[in-house]
Length: 96
Image (cartoon, rainbow, N blue to C red; front, side):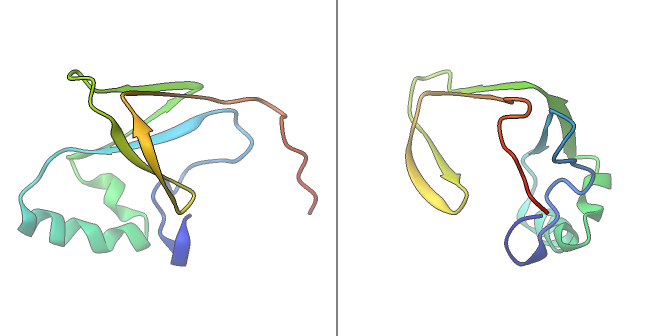
């Protein structure tokens, strides 16, 4: 979950070594207004225009080379025309 209990990827696991990538297709405003509140319960993932893929590596790029704006854990970034994310298994020790 992210800030205030938003369940972007409700089935994600912190220890499975995979990113859960959630992609929503473009949709009309009224459709988005109906789907968005479901993000708090995680039920948005059943919408036919919302897709989840799992991967160890994620590459995001723009065909025109323009920078992609992004938010990293609440901090705005200038972005880049290509961003590569990779899981580093067992890179963090978490104490409970």
